[in-house]
Length: 58
Image (cartoon, rainbow, N blue to C red; front, side, top):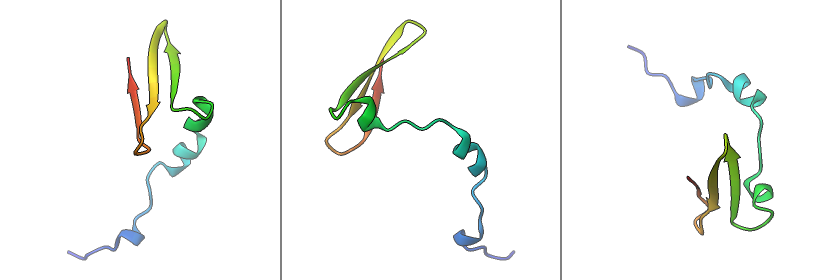
């Protein structure tokens, strides 16, 4: 078996990722740290933590 360097791998689905919509969390929260997202009449809260992580709760 031959070892392969990580640099030799190609990322599968990169073209799929490039076609997915991208949204800036800072724009969604309008510079704050929270935003509400509605899906099928359900309301979710998006929160940016002090550590810069995203949390999505129902």
